Length: 434
Image (cartoon, rainbow, N blue to C red):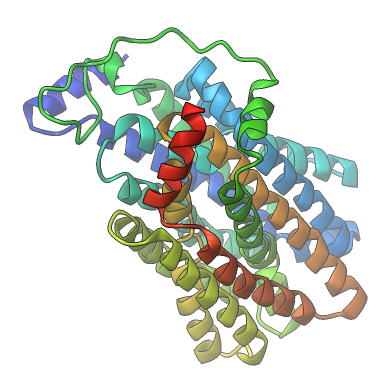
């Protein structure tokens, strides 16, 4: 309704509508990430009210991560078939509905349904796949920077909402902490309805950065798809070593971020005598550093060898996880951890997207990255449940931290097994010709 007049108004001022799409996508990621991060602040309140132990609650959150990841490949297909606007609005409705319904739960299966199934499916319908699709469709240049900015939305959501949520939990109870995130999801859903468009050609535009004189592509009919399509794409890339390296290293990425630190950090700090509000503030500090680190990573991924960037990111993350148990959970120690860990929390995303695009081509990049992202969330699910299990059995998170740190160092080494993208692309081309 408003997108065409706004696009024309922006064009007269030398601005491209793609930046509106980036803004809406950023807000979508911000509200979704706030919904995903909030349950990490609720482990202890839920345990105290319902008598569930950390392992039980972690298992529900692990369901969320599994569904979050497995929706990735199908999200790319749904966006192709039904359009960005319809998919994003549906996703935000599921997320906000899961948050609201959870405030009325009385039994464990309801936790699994609301924060496992609804949040998992809803957030998985957009997630990082939306960032990859938007950057590919709307930009011919600055794609790495755009992916970095959109990926940083998750850090910004954590930065804004977690300290507020922790304060509300402490003063008004955990149910009240859900309200700001619910409102944010609802407001963003309205903006998506009004302003989101699928492709530049729907507004008579070419992608941002397209060569001068490039003709506006005709609007293509919706792609015919079946549930078998994502599996056909997976079968097509299953013999490619680069795919499995990206899948495996992104598995470790999820294991060492969403599943471990995002889910268990506040509980981990509670074990060391640090209350929820300062612990959430440390997470917000990580979010601030990650906002800088991820945007910088997008800029760097447009200019430097993405394999070497990932080597540095995984290596730094692994060392910071080894350091955390020795930080003594003082302001100084946690600040050091927040800085080094935060700088590359999700800085791995832009180089991984770039490597997927360079290896598998623009047309397949979104769906292939969907499967790679599924690996990320499977790793997150393993860590969410595994760290909770370790905490229940051993009364400490330290073994989980050390295991995740060692896995990150392994990922740093493995990523260098990928050949330079130009070489990889040359190797893929004869295979296509054959």
